[in-house]
Image (cartoon, rainbow, N blue to C red):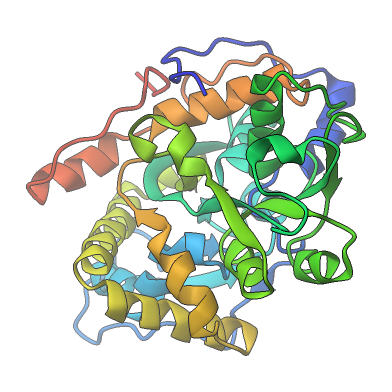
Length: 371
C-alpha cells in the first residue's frame, strides 16, 4: 500500500451514484437502526456550570473500535467535562444511519468510520460535517479457514467476506486485491477472488456453514471467527505507514460547531482524557468497554474474543488524516467513488487547543483542513 498523499482535489460524485454510495460507504456495519438511549440520561453535576447548550447529543456504535465513546460514557468522563450541560447518547449499527441522524439534527457529534465521513461530507458539498478528532486506529484483520487457505496467494479462487459493498474494509480488501495484480469487479464482487458482502452479525454463521472461506473484517468479528477455528492471516495495520490507519474519528455538525464551540471543546477534552485513561489502564478500560457493551446489547464479549480484539485496536487523539486521504483514493481507484474535493473536511483547531493545554503534541490535517 503506497504512502498516503497529502492533497486531495476531486469533483463530487455523479448524482446517479450517490444513492448507492449512501448505502455502500459505511463504517463497520452492524445493521442500520439507531437506538436512542432515552431511558438513560447522564447525571448532571449539581454544582456543574452549564455551557452554551442545555444538552449535547452524541452518537456511536456499540463496537470496540468505538472504545473512546463506550468508556468515556461508561466512566462519566464526558459528563465531567460538560458539567451542567447534559449528555445524551444514541447508538447506531451502521454509518449511513448515523450520518442521517446528523443531517436531521438528531445528534450533534458522532464517532464514526472514515468512509461514511467522506460520503457524508461529499454528499452535502462540504456543508454538513467536520472531522474534529481521532479515536481509534487498526482493529481490522483478514482471517481464513486454515484448511483451505494457508498463504495469501491461496486466496485466489476463494470466497472472502467483507461487511458491505464500498464500506471501509471492502475498499481496503479491493485495494489489496488490486495490488496483488488480481482482477475483481467491484460491484458484483466476482473475479479472481469472490468478494462476498456479508453483514458482520451473520459472518460467523456464514463461516461455520462453509459459505465463505474467510473474511476481511473489523473487531470483534475477526476474533469471533478465530474463536470458531479461523486463523489470522493478515493484520491490515501492517500495510500502513507506522502501522496506523484511521478506523474511527469524531465528527460534528458544522451548525453545532459554530453555535456551541465551548460544548465541542468540552467533548474533546472528555475524549482526550478518556483516551489517556484507556492507554494508561488497558485492563480496566477493556472491562469498562465490555460493561458498556453489555448495557447496550444485553451481553458482554467472552474473554477469547475481547482479549485479542482489544489488543489490536490503538486508541489515539490523532485522526490520522493522511490515511483517510488514502482510503478515499482507494475508493476512487476501485470505482466506488468519483473524484471529489475533501479540502475542508477537517477542523482540528479545537482539538489542538485542548491538546496544547494538556501538554500534548498537536495533530495534523494533511492539508485537508479549513483555513
